[in-house]
Amino acid sequence: MLTQRVKRAITENPKKLANLIDLANLPSTLREFVGQSQISRLGCFMCVWSYIKTNNLQDPNDKNVVICDDKLRSILLGKPRVDLAELPVLIKLHFPKEPK
Image 1 (cartoon, one colour):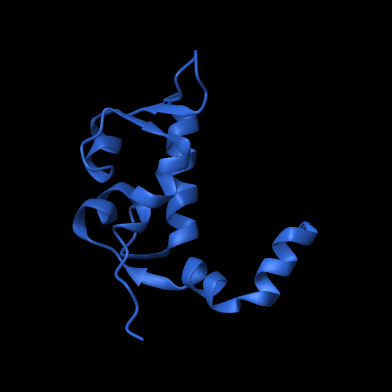
Image 2 (cartoon, rainbow, N blue to C red):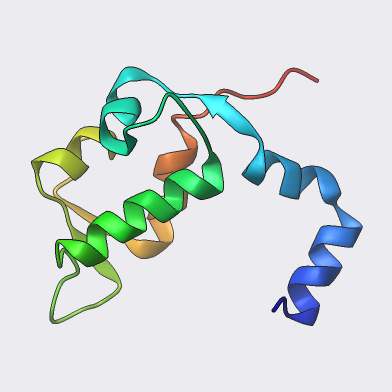
């Protein structure tokens, strides 16, 4: 079920949605983490989020902070702690920009 805000964002800028769901070839570090050679940015974020939840990597005192283990640190620029708001930006760095 999509909210009105999401529906409006999709209809106003469909290219933005396409960037999230288009398949892209992954660099080796991200490929090893995800286990696939191609995945969308949204799919990659969901895999990372699933890994965080499965391994209980959120800070118990502040759920907006992720404490990175070695595997997660390898794809998040070696940072030991990452704010949840920063996570999509760090994942986006692994995806090549589309030529205009």
